[in-house]
Image 1 (cartoon, rainbow, N blue to C red):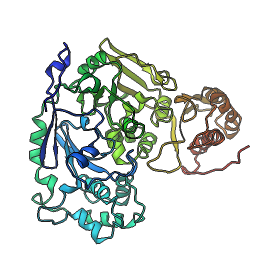
Image 2 (tube, rainbow, N blue to C red):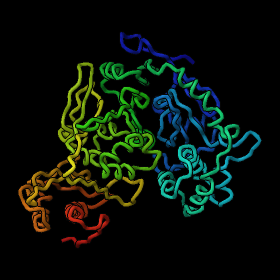
Image 3 (tube, helix red, strand yellow):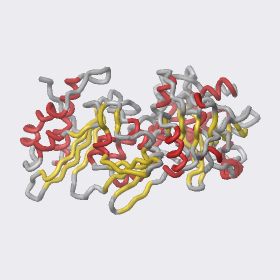
Image 4 (cartoon, rainbow, N blue to C red):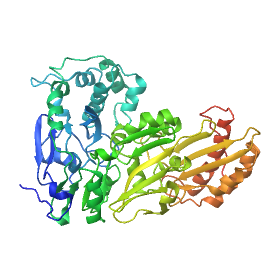
Length: 502
């Protein structure tokens, strides 16, 4: 097979012409890749590596978990991802590791695998390869993990048989087991992988396929801008945690496709006294340590966005660009007065994030523009800030609604400013300006909160769907304001208060 490259005068003229990565211990060089080809199908159908299972095909169950390694600032980092919604076109300059790679050539199981056997961590076995890979990723990245670390590592893996406790015991048992590099497959070939990945021309733009099935991997932000100028209708894919479902569940055509997950120009996190600038390609996992330190409530929210597999793929920039009314990061970012920088061949422009969302399915993004970064101003030390995610399942679930509250109170106890934003209550993430106005200038008291609660009906007319009814959303929004008041007044952080619907 040969690659198809563009001949137009654009960044494609420097195309390398193939997607190259390591699969276990083999060099893969693909000159023909369908834009919608998933890693799971490639593994099972083309490479016959059937240990990786398809359970849900939407990134929920974790049965398809594999590790993907990539160079980050010269260091080789491995992360668990969902192969069912990871596209082959996004794998350039990576090392993909499947469950078949763990055991020794003589059949001796890896300690993680052996622990699952010894502690009866498998029953039907369908989900077991995914659990093994998630635990192996934890084993590689953290010495002696505690119970909380193990449970977090397993957030994205579902099992209907074991009740999880045997799996957790297996993880605890293997926590301190560290065989030498001669045995462990990743440790054994680490130097080779670094040499291989370092030698790939990642700053060159890859263009594959005919115009009706074009796949582009830009080598720079400028190349991305030029590609979008040529293909303004293209689907830009960062983490594919949403776009993947467009393909696997909705069978939507997404051609042409531009994969930006490996674009280093969009991967920086910059901290200054004024705030944090987050590149559009920064994943939730990479952003976590910075945001958890600077904005603890936002860090807690990120811990509940899917499982590790989703957090390792999904990006804050993608969550913004996608414009979903139930995206979890826009409400707190709007409350924090964040701005978004958009880029095209014409240059850049910066808009307040609250103005970026125009209507359902519409954002203030001109043809050829892409989200380059988001800037989050520093939160003054004397301001209150909280984020609440309401979902049917605490972890790895889509929100019924997500709320963010930011408030400042004067020395006299008066509310001097308020920014309140909700997702899941309207066609876009939206501020509760009527509620804010009902609070500003008033004493920060339960009486003020009670009087302001009806203003939610002015700000929102929520819909009913399978996640929640309109009445539930409206009542919950009111109660979250009360919760925010009680918590800022010294009540227990996990206070639960019920109120009957009218």
